[in-house]
Amino acid sequence: MEIIIKQNADMASHASARVVARLVREKPNAVLGLATGSTPLMLYRELVRMHKEEGLDFSRVTTFNLDEYIGLKKEHPQSYYTFMWENLFSQINIKPENVHLPDGMAADVPASCAAYEQEILNAGGIDLQVLGIGSDGHIGFNEPTSSFASRTRIKTLTQQTVADNARFFDGDGSKVPHHCITMGIGTIMDAQMNLMLAFGAGKADAVSAMVEGPVSSMMPASILQHHPLAKVFIDEAAASALKLSNYYRWVYDGKPEWQRDA
Ligand code: F6R
Image (cartoon, rainbow, N blue to C red; front, side):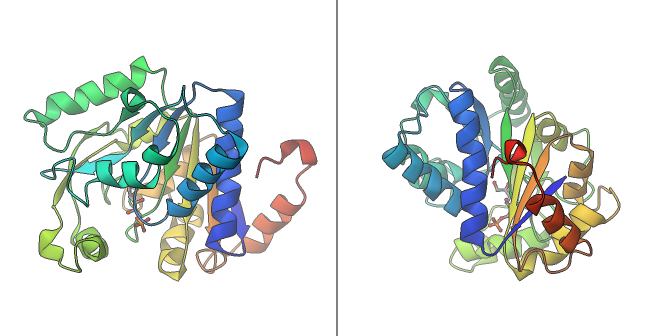
């Protein structure tokens, strides 16, 4: 894992956007895995700016989102479909047919999950997967004890995640769907690169367990220790519980110019 600590969330997001932009410039038909939630908002804002001001071209890019709530129609204000169109897709030149999200209204959920996996394979696999981390250590909606071999499937959110996400539903946990479709941990681990973002003191314990704790399904994000190319962009607050933070800064500051992409 490469740990990149920036002064604040804005700087960390901009650094992560440079990694995404570099991939899209080098491979115009890149396949991006995308996340929702509050964490990637500044990354998406920066990608929009790069598109508008620097001509970053998404016309051949394909995307697959990590997850979607079950039972919310696409047009629901809190569906991840709405989130992605509002915060990214409507502001860049991506082709609607190249955008994929799990179908939270599918009549046959297992069949639609299998089809989603097949679509990822047909696209050539995910080049770069954007991830956030839940306060309980989830990635996608792979909650604690999720199988490390799991593929796209239905999951039940933990009470912790329902409580965390109530802020998007007028603070009312009873409005948060309890079920979702999420890419599995096996799906996420198949991405060529994983790019994790985490900001704020509320993520500090999860970040330290992910980076420096044992690899355990009780902390799903810890599986990224086994990924050959996982970059973790965090702010000072999210880094505050890391034991080796000085070492990570030392590594980053000492990188030769040719190795720098952020
Ligand atoms: C969202 C997702 C989740 C979030 C995580 C953090 O697509 O897969 O794993 O990344 O719950 O959410 P925020 O960023 O709102 O703290």
